Length: 173
Image 1 (tube, rainbow, N blue to C red):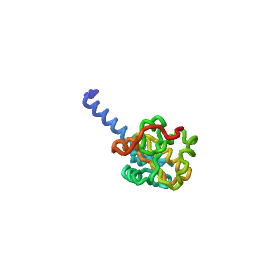
Image 2 (image 1 turned 45 degrees about the vertical axis):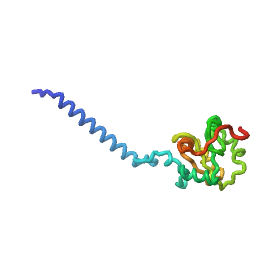
Image 3 (image 1 turned 180 degrees about the horizontal axis):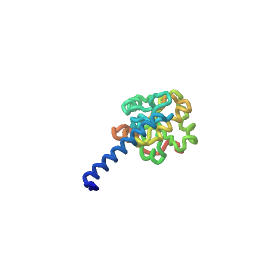
Image 4 (image 1 turned 30 degrees about the vertical axis):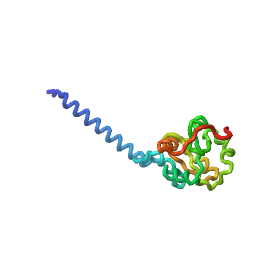
């Protein structure tokens, strides 16, 4: 005698099989990952600040409060890594403009007179903006070991009503 399978039994069997496939797949993926020479971390921090570390493990990030204190004391030089158009629309008071796209061409002119041990704070706009990170890495490469990144610097600076100015870079590009 052939037994007829009910809809409920079919659904139950289908869900059980799906669950078994998912469990086997995840287990297999985790095991394979453990034996890879370049294994992927199972848990990671994805905040922009966590990706801004030097090879030594030291963070390139400077907090807004610290940057503000350095601004008011005059102990830091600010570099705007955004385009000249964005710089002209507004920038941190006294900041120099060194767009990442033309860093090779204008580096010497913009950095003239800045000692290698000076505190240099680069910024751009948006948490995912990498221009300031790239500029800071270039500064380290060229021997400016006290360079830092103010993540989402322009937006934070404006939100906290800190001193800004508009207009082109004196002398311009």
